Amino acid sequence: MSALDAGGTPSRGRGFLPRRRRAARHQRPSLLVKICLAWLALMLFVAIFADWLAPFGYTEQSLLTRLKPPAFLGGPAEHILGTDGLGRDVLSRLFFAVRTSILIAFLGTAIGAVTGTVLGIVAAHFRGWVDDIVMVLVDFQASVPFLIVALAILAFFGNSFVLFVCIVGLFGWETYARLVRGLVLSVSGEGYAFAIRTLGVHPARIYLRHVLPNIAGVLAVQLTLNFPEIILLETSLSFLGLGVQPPGTSLGLALGEGRNYIATAWWIGLPAGAVIFLTTLSISLVGDWVRDALDPSLSRAE
Amino acid sequence: MTAPFLLRKGARCLMTLLLAVTFVFVVLRLSGDPVQRMLADDVPAKVIESYRVMWGLDRPLPEQYLRYIANVVRGDFGLSFRDDRAVATILAERIPATLKLGLLALGITLLIGIPGGIVAALNRGKLVDRVVMGITILGHSLPNFFLGILLILYFSMTLRLLPSSGIGTWQHMVMPAITLGTSFAGTVARFTRSAMLEVLNQPYMRTARAKGVQRPARIWHHALPNAAIPVVTVVGLRLGGLVGGATVVETVFGYPGIGSLLVNSVAQRDLAVVQGVVLLIAFTMVVTNLLIDLAYGWLDPRIAATQSGAGA
Image (cartoon, chains in turn yellow, red):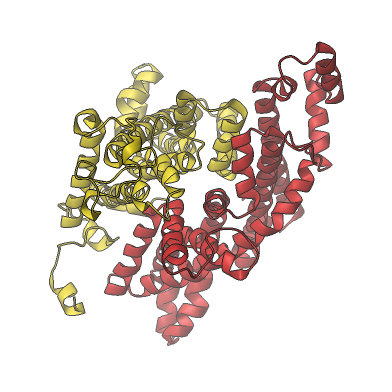
């Protein structure tokens, strides 16, 4: 593609770049963003209907068909992506891995967003020492790399699915807290908040019904930034063998298990890695687009 | 850079460190009795009791807490649960390897990220900008463990050029350093780009142009120094991510550093080593952040001026 060509097509395929000039007018999704949305929809579909889509059970072993290559590389036709070291169908396991990873990512994002938002509101509402405590915790969380904290908690308390989800949920709360605290402080000074307060409305109602909708856009943007990082956190921990435990599976664990066979049977791990990559990439690109569409001034956030 | 400013910064650092030590202590105690975890179930009560006395677990909790802090300050992190060696010794063995990897990776990050961001900003909206920014998004989405495995698959398995794991020669450093370094180059490039764009729009840039300063001189003497502050901030904030990334990358490449030590110790539940590593990392992070704060004053005399003033 020549430079002229690139300059000559005005709007197609450009949405993924930070072009603030164009951001002002609400843009329709570019082809690339549409592809990303389609991929994310597909992942959601696979996560929900994994039971029906998977040709085999994800723990179903068959020692006679171990380490068979994918069908398109001359393997047996019924195993589209081949089999792993225990003769389990890689494609079926991939479907269930998508389900686990997306479920954890959703739960983790929700926990982090709610905790952070509530703490941010509490800090902004009470000010004084409550504010100080929350901000010290925010500073602390921001100063120690979270992967290390997560590893420490897993070491001390052992691993269980609930604990693991909670740990993933703990990630990123401080960004929400900081963001919400600042927003609430500035919103509280606005006329409408003052008016409602004068009417004697309960603070909880003010925050839930009036303040939260007003800062929802910023929170949505933060969500799109947070979500891919949560997926990377979960897959990293599972990859290290310290997250989701066998016989369960997750995208990270699948890649981690495949690592041992990388020289002989690359198809066990690489599909999971590719799915992680494409999913986080799609969310980032869609997030960029949402950010520009919601509010051009937000693209300067951070 | 005045004494009150340094004092306040120092106090804040100590607070964070104390919080980290307290966090580790509380979690250690919450996670159960270390004696019972270490010894088998059928060990006589007398032996358990003697271990408890030996480790000071029979004392009241506040005393244990103070003792713990005193030990940590002396650099005594206790003995590894697995082989009874001093945790401090184990850490000391691993630190040089991680330091080497980390600095190399940081160098790669800066060498790719900063020029990339500058070039993108100077060619804003052009093909170069779009290509650079496209690559940063790709890099941001590519998990470092996946990149590591792809590199191993290609350079070790297919081309048989580089060793896939271990340590010793410079060849062992290539893939870990690239994997770790490139994972943050994209973020640095993005921030450099936006910092540069911000600076390029400032009135003093127009003034410099009006004065007839040539473009290279404008960029070198006027734009870059002013864009340095936000970039340094981001690099400082992301160092934690580099440390976290090191745990994964060291594990992928079987590189014997602090990161793989932590992962192995977590897997084996060697709590003594885990708390040692966590405190070491917390300490490193706090000191690094302090150094970055101090670097601001050196990078930007205006900050030093406000710091010596009343508020800041």
